[in-house]
Image (cartoon, rainbow, N blue to C red; front, side, top):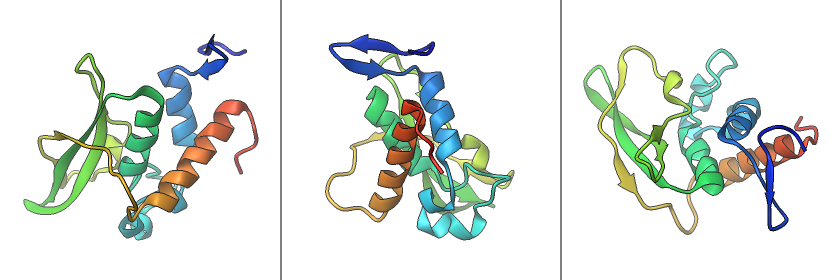
Length: 140
């Protein structure tokens, strides 16, 4: 068992560092929001990953999902997702995706989406890649 992992009732627990590394190593154009695919590139791998990343992080650590408006040159263009944990700590693993003219407004807690969403396939692909990465299986 590697550093950062522990066993509880037969369940493997990973540290935030383990999960963050697995998420970042698992991002691709095929795991980002469909409207962001044209802007996704290896030089900005966080682009379009906020929704899927926040959901996978929520799977591992719970807490609240946060959502805030994104403005470009003062115009509302999208929403951005991140996580807030019980202690009040907010964690945004994809904040670096934004260009200088893109600003994220104040966030608010939102319920986890239920039922079918437009990003189900991307979320499931990212989740599976992260689980493979954490288990030491080849991802690619």
